[in-house]
Length: 228
Image 1: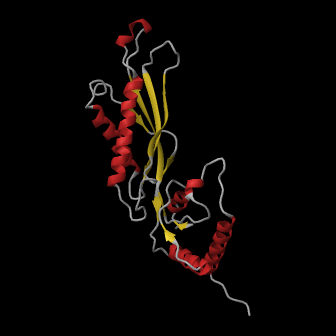
Image 2 (image 1 turned 90 degrees about the vertical axis):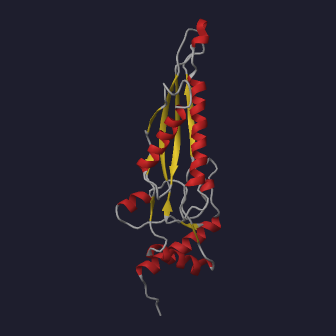
Image 3 (image 1 turned 135 degrees about the vertical axis):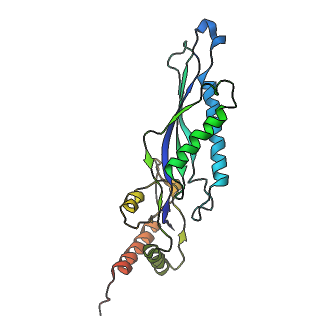
């Protein structure tokens, strides 16, 4: 269990990569959007490695998980005997809490544009990038905020050890509360590596420990008097 006063952002993107269709009897005239799309796919992988090496945030000493940038859908064509003319690439881009959504979007667009200029086909037919569907903005509060220090104190008293303070790798509803002016952090049992799976699970001991920490946090935050 970790005390997480920050959460990274997540957004979907789409890139349309155009080739040139041709008759099946003139296949040598065909420019495959699949082949051109693969170049864009590789460029996206390169950008991910660059962002991991360059982007920094104190709550993400290893930003690989928070910056996840990858292709989830790669599709082209609709008939076996028809050389396709369009490839559709859809993916997900992660951003750190100290990044702006618009700047990250522009970084992806400009990187693919610059890479396309190096290619004899793509320089005249660059990928058409847009951002559609899910957008979860990043958010954070100071690790020194009173609610964060209160949770850490409750963790220490309830479990007899120090809490690990890190950023959450992925978007969450924390952003909605922070945007509304309500200081919020993420805390609970389990790990992110077990999330969104068919066999998702948490240890019973972690549920009990998290309950102890949250109960003591409520008492400390709201104030209480001991009976007797």
